[in-house]
Amino acid sequence: MARGRSSRPAPYSRSARLGELLREIVAFELARLDDDRLELTSVTGVDTSVELSRATVYISTLDGEAAPAALEALAEHSLRLKQAVARSSAVRKVPDMVFALDPSISAGERIDRILDGLADEAGE
Image (tube, rainbow, N blue to C red):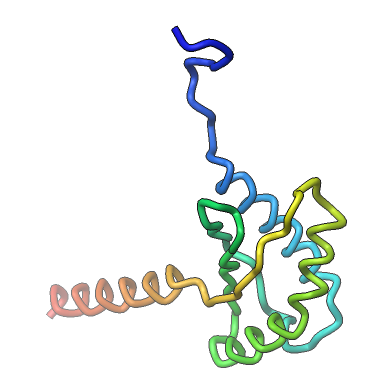
């Protein structure tokens, strides 16, 4: 039997726990930023690399046309967001954050369009 190790698996990996922490902190700071380009933007998730050095922060916007401007604004505020993570957490090294649109939003919309098309065909 291994010494010093529990036989129970950890409920989340380190990268998943860090991702959730980053999501909470970035979402909180996003609400505090005074930038009109980020008005209808929300953080939907964060994927961190296994070595915890890089994090992709996924966002969504209610106005799809505002997404490029929101990504530009987040890139401009990335240093402030990284400093907020350093201040609000006990992470030794804050990962570099890259911002991207959440692909699941557009995939969900595509599935809705397909289902609507199938429903229209079945109703004919």
